[in-house]
Each structure stands twice: as structure tokens, then as C-alpha cells.
Amino acid sequence: MRVMIAGGGSVGTAIALDLIERHHEVLLLEHDADVAEKLRGILHGVSVVNADACEYVSLAQHDLRSVDVVVAATGDDEDNLVVSWLAKQEFGVPRVIARINNSRNEWLFNHSWGVDVAVSTPALITSLVDEAVEVGAIINLMDLAHGKMRLIEVTLSASAPAVADGVTLDELHLSDAVRVVAVVRADQPMVPQGSMRFVEHDHVILVTRANATEDCAAAFIG
Image (cartoon, rainbow, N blue to C red):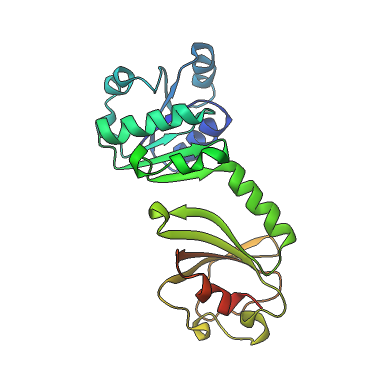
């Protein structure tokens, strides 16, 4: 897969390193010439270019139409929106992921700006804080598919039906609108199986339809 990353800060650099390890083709655009030069010595295997990703000419010069995914990862929300809009509207990039730096701007990061997936670091951190103090509460980690789906987390209490009833995942008979995608137990991630039983303090990660909160609560909130 060919991926273009806008922004060579700590976030963009970390993403680039991870993608290269996963054998993707990565192009990183950084507007600061000194930073770009430094990154060339760090990001082996990544094509680092000193260019402004907010400019149409820069994107056109680097064949953005052949890119599968664009990640707008700069530290400026306005820049990330411009990059997203250009990538989607001018170059037809199939998937655009944008970083939100200020959660107050979250409402802007939608399909009209070319954003397929918006990732709000402040919101994720807030969610993790909430999770630490709110056992038995549904925490929204991320909206997906333009708000139609959600990635949520629930930390199970002893009174949660999934724990108190001693049933397996299959026996919970969750609706088609809810899918358990991971369970973290004692800091160890686990792939959910139909025969899995839940215990107190399990962190259950689910993908749900936006209107399926009651289905989750019935199984995981006690």
C-alpha cells in the first residue's frame, strides 16, 4: 500500500516508522527543510520530501493520485483540513485520515472536508482518563463511518451481566449491531473467542452502530 504522510513531527515520524515496518511504501512531506533533512537520516526506507502538503503543486508533483491512503498528521488543524480536502477532492485519494489537535475543532473533520477517519488525540487521552475512574461506564473512543459506527470501551464491574452471569461471549447473544473486537485483561490484549468468559476489570473494546448503546449496556453494564 502507498501512503502519504503530511507532517514530520513526532506523530508523523512514529506513523512512518510503523508503516515501514509493516512493509508499506511511505512518502512523507515536511515543509521545514532542516527537519526534512534530519528525518532522512532517521526514517530509512521512507521517501522524505521537503514540500508543503497544503499546496496543490506539491501534491501533484509527487503523484498523489497513486496514493492509497493520506494521513494528515501535522500539529495544525487548519493544515490538516486543507491537506484532507485537497487529497480527496483534487486527487481522489480513497482513504484520508486526519489528526485533530484541538478537540474544539472536531466538528470540522468530516466528509465535507474530505476526512474519512478523524483521530483526536486529546479525545483519546480524555477517554483513557475517564476509563481509569469510571468502571462500568461506556467510553466513546472514536467515531467511525461518518458517525454511523463507534469504537467504544467498557471496563467491567463485578455486577456486569457478562461477569455476574458467568456466560461466554457466544451466550451473551449480542445483536448484529455490536461486535467485540478485543479484550484487555491484566494489561494483556486478547483476541475474543466465542468460548471466552469475562472477569471483573476486563477492558472490552467494541465496534457498534451509533444507536446500539443499549445493546452494549445490557451485556456489559451492571
